[in-house]
Picture 1 (cartoon, rainbow, N blue to C red):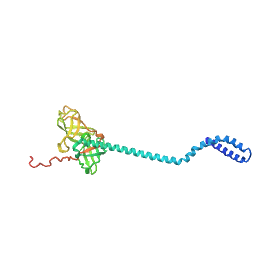
Picture 2: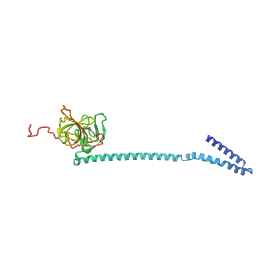
Picture 3: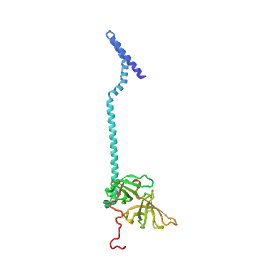
Picture 4: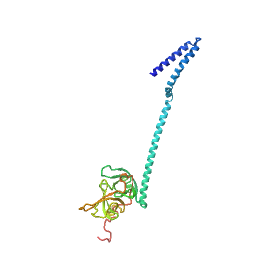
Length: 281
């Protein structure tokens, strides 16, 4: 409706201008022009005010497109900067974790290689990690894997040239030779799929909550003395041959990102394959 009204006014203005042009030779035309000009000038101003925004848009359309393109470029640049910053933070966190792991093993650092966790097995009860180190880096099947505080978190189970798989100690197929540090009681540390337990602890053995569990050299499959867990509870059944001993890991196995593989250890290397000369048979 507003546009129609303005079009009508514009038509009237044009018609008035034509009339004034026709009457301009006549003597009273000057006063007539002044009179009509006073009448139409507010209308002309209103029309100009209405038309100016559309005209400005048309005149500056190219500038608006350029500004939109610059804004899009700035947004893309900001997104790239945020991504780079996030990557730098992740790299700093990874390096910090690896440095802390190496510091935990002290002067034995040359026996280890750091590795990053690439993937986890999602199967319930299975706890396998894929890491970015393999045979080319000295990783071998059976080598122990350590987490924060130089605590045992698993054992290498498969290896190829560039990658390896680690079976965590809570995996349902995991079992390692251990002993209770305070009483030197031997036992097998077995994974349950959700946690840990000590198997083959004799009934009445001096084992209590809070005792530290260490790896044992028995069988030559692991180096002795690695921190493996802590006893949380001991349950005795009257007629049972063995205690029920629950153990908790000393590392947060669900949040492992950087680990140490003990490449300086060769499983079974210290076991004599045949009686040595002069040894009793």
